[in-house]
Length: 423
Image (cartoon, rainbow, N blue to C red; front, side):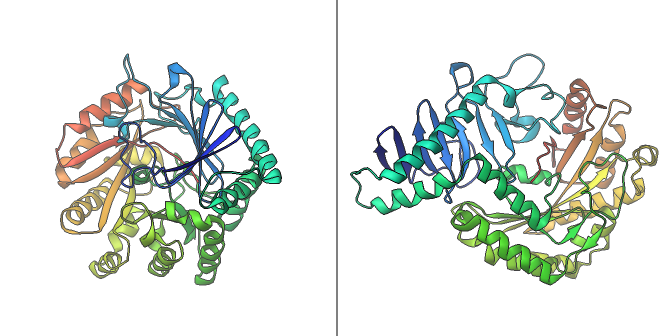
């Protein structure tokens, strides 16, 4: 670690986080941030001088922090201990902390209020003061004792430009490139949602009544020229901070249907330098409909296996295991089709090296999870399953009860609740 103090700020280079996305002990961040200490807070910047995380809350919340996405959304990470009826997050979601966004949170987190707390507002105000301080330092350039002062001033010059207004402009520029994605695949929790989004299609062939993942645009495929455009513009925006990314999401809701999937994945891997990341491995995430998934030939799966990524994670919306519930949800598929998809996914998860398939099921207070348990047993499915409590239609008690019940069905199935984030 290289540390330099310039008047009332301290800048730390090479204070590396973990490369494997596991949170442990005092080092619970990932990649290679530049950390600035100012007043009572610790500010994590990316390699392009954009704020990413703020630590340093008061004693009652010392293990909490807030974290910003490239879409300029702030998430409250609640790392405190838990009591009462809500168990700790690890067995529920697969992460040691809750990521609270206030939009599509799990029922036990709704009303959490983390981002509205006064000490969060204070931290953001201190960030504003920090940017003003950095700008003043860059203008004066006081002397520092450092072998390579150019590294310091280069970083501070970048950071000085990235106040909150500029960060919003960058987010709007990214959304202007590809339109954003309302819900990321659930498997992206494994990389702390640190992904670069590339659209190979818009919308979805389905129009399910319950869905919050579908974008506002009509279903359409992206051309190769449009994919090239997105890649070039995104690579320029992420810049040097591509070092801190090893994962790509191909959007939107049925990327497996795109004839340009392999081209897009290969070009993204190279342009975003996924193989040169400081993070372990390289991941490709995408959604698929059950119909598209079942239509894939073994040769198509072989081509996915041949992609340069270390892991290709496909997530499928199965939603329910009975025709009655599927009709109620407005999901245009049958229980027989769901069972066929689960059977094939289980085979792939047992036999394929790179390609992994996960599935989603919905939870509501209106029906029990018996049909999901029956489908798991009948299909001999193995792999991850995510449960999505419908907002306003599923209580925390019901979600926790169904989660506990489904965890007992087969040991080869990893059942978790779906924490929805967007980009």
